Amino acid sequence: MKITLKYNKSVQENAGIYYDKSKKAKHKLEGAIEALEETNLKLEKLMKGNLKIVQKPMFKKKIKREWFEKFRWFYTSTGFLVIAGRDATTNEIIIKKNTDQNDLVFHTSMAGSPFAVIKSNKKKIDKKSIDETAQFVACYSKAWRMGMSTLEVFSVTPDQVTKEAPSGEYIMKGAFMIYGKKNILDPKLELFIGINEKGRIMSGPKESVQKYCEKFIEITQGQEKTTTIAKKIKSKIGGILDEIVKVIPTGGSKIAR
Image 1 (cartoon, rainbow, N blue to C red):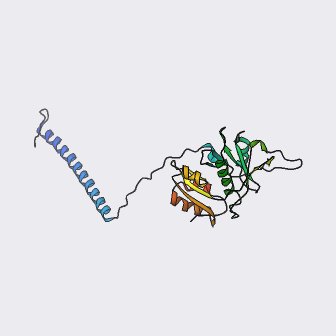
Image 2: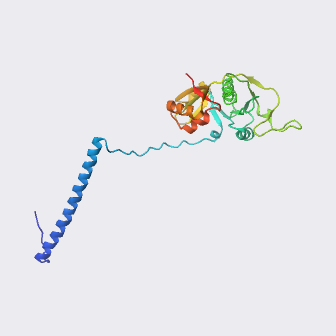
Image 3: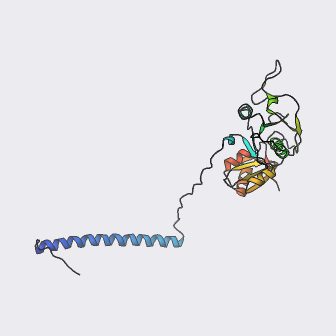
């Protein structure tokens, strides 16, 4: 060991300097030994299974919500966006604020059914999209809870839909008068629920859900509560539980076998 003495210090002062340094070194060594012993103890407990490793939760990137997600919605297999009311308020909003001249409006004669609109974007709407939208409307009508297999649905142009009632009559919120010829359809009540590559939950007819979703499942009318069936769907396709709950029709469902 090499010792350097300071010429301007006395022997006693030089000795004091090295004594202080040795004390500090001793404290550091003791601290290092203590930390090493503590680490070894934790490793022993970990090997015996007595120490739990706490992992930080991973947060998934939040999905950006689109304007149409305040309504019921889906994309037809040929690419048209369809929006439908969830209740009387959203029925009003869709017809009054979100329906354009070249769109098509769908409804049923059954009270409590949603109004739905195919957004044309000034393109000709094909028959496949019309059939799929009629099926979508039927599934979210009261026909679902009643266990009906089919339901008459009609489509009209926006100028046939109005709030103007015959003299002496009152039109309730979410309801409209339909004038003129109706295009009558008779779809089956078949509904599929899927999750797309962005993690967004979409419901609709089989061909549309199959086209846009990575995983999907069919549900039918049944006796299971919405939250119960939603948990089962989540276990099969993933997704956010609350978003799955939103697309399940009112009135009881079950997973198709």
